[in-house]
Image 1: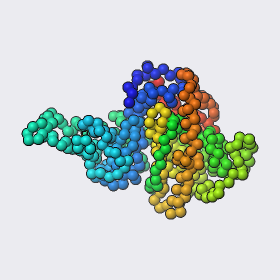
Image 2: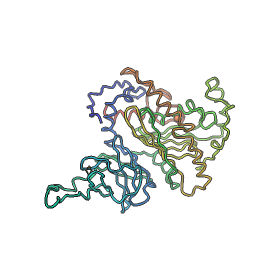
Image 3: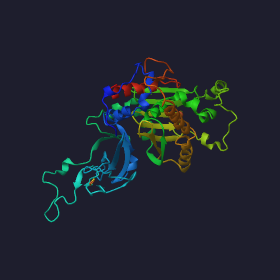
Image 4: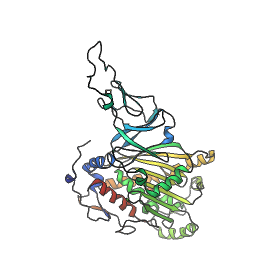
Length: 422
Ligand code: FES
Ligand SMILES: [Fe+2]
């Protein structure tokens, strides 16, 4: 990793403190990227690591990324969950190379130092030397050479980790809207994993944070959504922010008037090429799956700083996690969820509607492409030029009861600006 610059070496021109302007360098500058690792991922935030159902048995483990750090998350025999950096305390070798699995202990392949599932150093081969010669010095204390651990907290099955020695209270960090939606989506029914997808998007990780906080683009970019009435700008819905403005819950709700409003949509989209009433699917089953929560929410997108998204899009329930891979590349890891007690038909329908999301999803395909287009387009932008975020109004950053807005994106930037110390 490049050397972390001091703040004074990074000269960003951030003119409006309502964050309706954002300098493009935040998406392109390697120095900003390096500083993010220190100020965000190694600092006072909670990072999503895994869901508890992935660690059902003692010895189960999964790996994930916290900024540039590769981490291992384990369940021990006493049922406790631990997380530590995937780098040996001896000479730094990567310890675990599988994405997930089960193990009795952590053994480094290089010189076979072994660690407990909590990351404590247990064994050093040849520590006493051979035939009375060599070995580790008497001053060597195994207790001082464990793996670098993260603090771990679990809420509603979601496992979070922090490298901070003094992380914020997790419930406060999540905020009231996240807590109630997590309860609605992940607690009222016990989740199970239906499968995983990974997608590499050639764009900065914060562009994805903007994208999921931006219902404005939903009916404009996504022809599929608007043509089949899944999302339209007249829908009821809005956004709610937490006290730090960093986390957004945006939601749209089905209502009686949607069909009527469709006529307005036809008119509004005339000549744009986006709305085609004659477009039909050979098999429309995908668009006809009934909402199984029965509460009318068509989409619920929880965007939790810095890299977690919990989303319900129709009947697709997924945990999306961002893994930054440099200023201009992000890996999006998606965990698709079903629920204990789902009938085979309900599971089938969830797998069917999973086609909305992911690298070739009817909806998500365009989001990946939109990010690529932005990253490509801003390459030639001069320092001191900015994106414009004025849809829905400027000034105060507050909840809205309408969808076409960029206020929640300004909320993200206000927190980012603060935590980065700009
Ligand atoms: S690098 Fe791990 S035991 Fe030597
Ligand atoms: Fe989108």
